[in-house]
Length: 441
Image 1 (cartoon, rainbow, N blue to C red):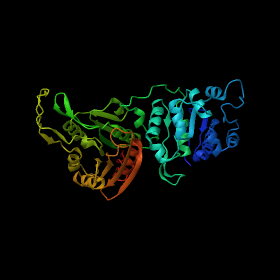
Image 2 (cartoon, helix red, strand yellow):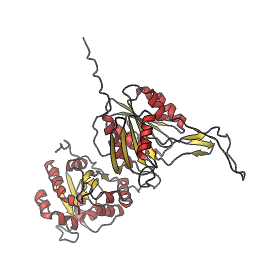
Image 3 (cartoon, one colour):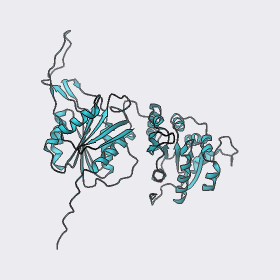
Image 4 (cartoon, helix red, strand yellow):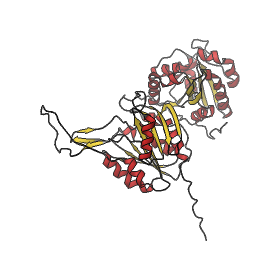
């Protein structure tokens, strides 16, 4: 069992327990919170109480359990109102697809959902359900809505599920959940409206993992987004890349302590992470992106080429807007530079290059051909013909192929989790740093 944080921003927590087989782990979460010196009260749905009895939590907390909305109140105030005034933080673990949908849409017909609507402090959800339920567009949309309101989501783990399936959906480790609760802010939960469908909330590319320092002292360069190749002054060739994957990679590299250069094509400002240790270089065309990468290359340890660079550009784009003439139009196209290949051919020993392959057929064959041609160390391949993943989606499913013949399949999951797996693969390729020479007197 891992260590809990030494400091506690919150001292009074309401734990919501819902109807999942993982409800038994809520007892451990409750116990960990108590051992950390936190006062705990438990709210349960009727289905949650069928997995673990309220008596279990009353024994652990030495407090009555809020298990019925219309139960006998202990005071003149209803529990969901009085508890909301008492608590510093709220955590729902496990959070089923049903309770996530209720919270997202403001339904309130059980102790957990009524408390949520009454509480304006920090809220943490730890989902637990079958992989298919978790990846269903309805669940994904509900989680996105809650993130946009400031709710923290502790991502579920992958493994053997109770139903016998293998995949993502297991309740996160109780220590990780408790760490998220104790690290939550004691301020009010923002009541912002959900982001518009065509602009992703920054929360779609954040990570709840603590910093780990595995890339401290390293410089990582990430290319991201599409490029625009102009046909004339007002029209251009491009693709649907939103920059989500590049943003997730940037945040993951920074979480690991790296100095990060993000070279991004035209994307929304929300897909351009900022902060200490992150420098954003905005470009438009493939040629501009190549120049920016080449200028930075001598200082870089790891290159991750996640941009969806347009393969072609107009050979000689006109300087004026092309007008309709009633006739067909022919514009000769020429190939754009292959940025990953260009860097792969000039990289220094010890520099790592990682490419992405967005394919619609023969995924493995095409990915391995690119791995060799571009002299990459790793290539991350995904099938963009699948409408559930890839371009302009919050989730992806990839296979990471290595030059050494290795391969790792990463099942469908948030792009922040894919970014984590990419850098886990990178770590094994990095050359250890030589210790600095000691000073002599």
